[in-house]
Length: 115
Length: 113
Image 1: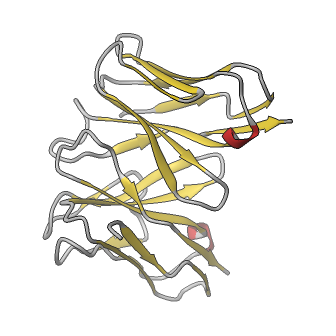
Image 2: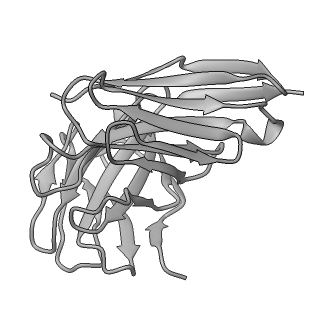
Image 3: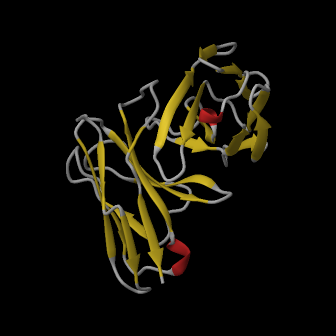
């Protein structure tokens, strides 16, 4: 059974600082996604990582995937208040779901960037 | 505007009552999903459908049922609501075997009292 763990669950950081959110998963997968959720809102797709060593960057966020370690990271560079949100990783693909595209989500990381 | 529409936005429901959450998409996506979101537990898959006419159980299917009569609609029914079904429910869709992940609806906040 595929399990996805994120840490930390809560992250309070100051503007201008760097930090990393970690996403570990328990079984083989070649497909990992990062989503952002603002309070009371739906989930917005941030990154799609489809191969070992994949790295994607958008603004102050950079995501990477190591399929051998079953680990993805979301790195935040020089955080700003607008990045405050909950971030989810989700895993699916090979070895899970057959013909479906079922994703298993982590518990989320609540990021609070303080001025 | 292409996307997923969920209704209602929020609902307070008496325990024991029947309730159907509606989900409609206009992207012609074959696969659709229902998740519930609870604090500290993330999103958990309730039911899914690979294509019209087929459905399957997710991680937490008990107390819920779904149907997929056509490509666009994927309603979720609570036959007899219980307080533990208080949650935010998200409908999502994706293309078959897509690499692009899901498109999510805006969610339904359900409170069972």
